[in-house]
Image (tube, rainbow, N blue to C red; front, side, top):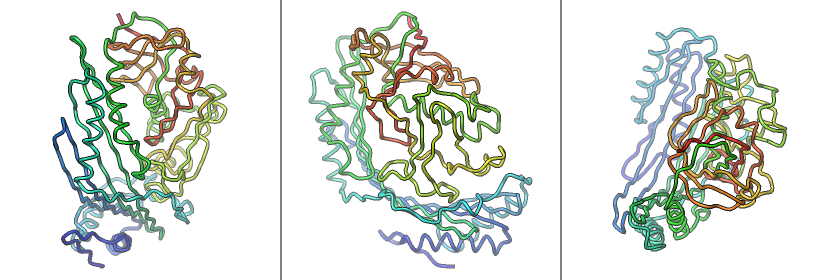
Amino acid sequence: MSQITSSGNTSPSNAQLEALVHDILTEARNQGASAAEAGVSLETGLSVTVRLGEVETIEYNRDKGLGVTVYFGTRKGSASTSDFSPEAVRETVRAACGIARYTAEDEYAGLADAALMAREIPDLDLCHPWDISAEQAIELARQCEDAARGCDARITNSEGASLSSHQGYRVYGNSHGFIGAYPSTRHSLSCSVIGGEGEQMQRDYWFTVARASGDLEAAQQVGQRAAQRTLRRLDARRLPTCQSPVIFSAEIATSLLSHFTGAIRGGALYRKASFLLDHLGKQVFPVHVHIHEQPHLKKALASAPFDNEGVATGARDIVRAGVLQGYVLDSYAARKLGMQTTGNAGGVHNLIIDPGTLDLPGLLKRMNKGLLVTELMGMGVNTVTGDYSRGAAGFWVENGEIQYPVEEITIAGNLRDMFMRIAEVGNDIEVRGSIRTGSILIEEMTIAGE
């Protein structure tokens, strides 16, 4: 077994990490496993936080870990460690084998099908290391917070500005002979401030995140946006209870699509715990809605050449002309449902709902009168029934223009109805995560207020 040493500032090389996965799989076979899979990851990073101009935290991290899952027929066991020494690898594999020998057989357990493994690993341009020192990171965070605090005299306090930069390398392999690996980076800058006027205080934030530091918004811009978002919430009112159109702003609209993916995820389906059970091939959105997955977008935050089981990822339609075309499945769930994995072990990879032609001001004009939601609170979503009820804050709109901020309200409906009542998707696309959507206009929801 190859020896990996990590001394001082020296980390294992990428080739050593790939060799380690090969060694783990060999060890599992030597200990009697009929099949095995293993993953190794190494991440390094820097995070700093500045508050009121002073440094609050500086954190360096160098995290590593390995996990192994073994199969004895259809009995499965898993174990993990952060120690890469040969003795630790042997002990970790032994622990996984020990667990597998005592677990019940499960006919659906096992590796993903060999024919589905990623044969080629496309370069998705995911790795852009940022050679930034702690001093430089502190200066950028300070510039960000200064821009927010200096924006307006009503900005009275700050929760701070944070900058982080992380770089990682992930290797996955299994006993089909598949070993795949790719590097990635993720950099972010965020700021949160508090504003006050009279008795009232409000807080809000903004952040930017990207694979490459050059794609981040400027520090001053992030700070000013955080301040402006805070100031616009001052003098918020409550609304009387009513029925009204509702626009979910783009950064909030992603949650609607995450509820959708949760309802078509394999685990919810085979447990019969989804309001979209048995909806494959059925209308679940209006005909103008097209939702698809694009795992190979260059530099995107959720791009991946293969999923957590080594299955090749690929572009596919999930909703076409409003009709549900496919589920979100890993191998286990797929077998339980008598289907094939969709390459979604670990989640969705750049889920996109196609935008219309209107920007947010255009959506407000189309709505004419109603509620723009910019913040959601609470977890009142039942994925079994689709019932939806969450605390909200945002802005009341009349004559297509924002009139005043609102708070302490609840918006309610049923996700099945809400999806079918999507009138328009804006072109103000949110790209800071695994789901890409513009603001979403829903024809009618219940607003509970005074």
